[in-house]
Image (cartoon, rainbow, N blue to C red; front, side):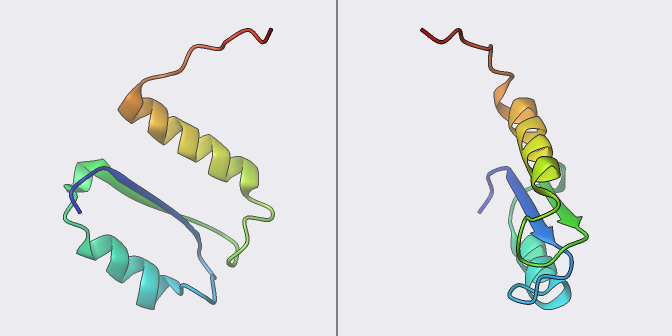
Length: 75
């Protein structure tokens, strides 16, 4: 894979351990270094406790690659 990638995981995820799952996946991507990012949060598999950070980081990453989206007025 060579497209931009953002990986966001809990550092202590028992299902996808940092050293044996997250890091090898990230390193195996063919994406250039400047277009990939691996963020970890001090949590396990659940986003409980870092959901706001997950949303903020995800939106910032998308805005950088796709541009910001103008707010629309609801009907």
